[in-house]
Length: 261
Image 1 (cartoon, rainbow, N blue to C red):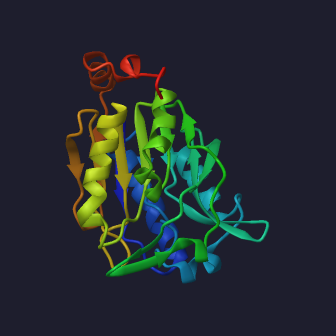
Image 2: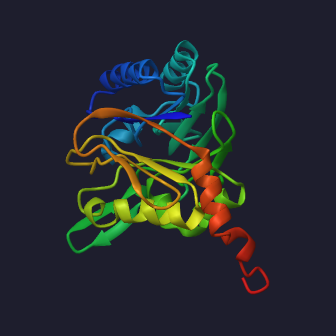
Image 3: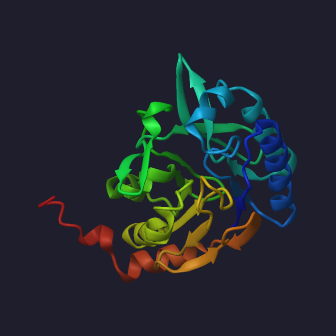
């Protein structure tokens, strides 16, 4: 299976982002991708003040673009995330479509980024409501679990996906330039080793609101690809034999002490 990481340079104009994301997806398909992942909030720059303005209902222009592009390219798409408006609330929502353009499902970010560090304060819950869903799991073209950004800091969230035998954890994200250098690679590699699967984090290109460095980690915790700071696409092969080898050589699932925890 060939996976495309689409590190888009997201700006404050939603129409521009949608057009450029569509072209990036089509380029990914031309490079032979079977599935592509867009960044968190790919339709609008990661600024809480813009989320409500850019929000839309589930079936809106973003849904339409992703569905049509998936159908045209014959490529499954994990649509990063967008601000979804529903019953007076805004959610940070990822939309997923299969290669026929059919809607697989949505995932609303469950863990909101509310932090107060010495040099950085951010409260996502001022603009976004938390989702009450579990990670989204689907099977084609590879058994995949979808979470968003801050979710990766909660090992039990990834463990839900491990227990459902995912081969890939897909994580649209936008780590900040404060937390990104400290924890981004560390967390992706740790969750890959913990759950013996591929973990793919896809960020907007580096800016004042995003760290960049979209990354794929192997089940052994190795960094397969790092896109650095600039906008770009990388298509990589996912070999499921690596997942099988990791889980058979170190049988974490079988050796868990479920009698104790």
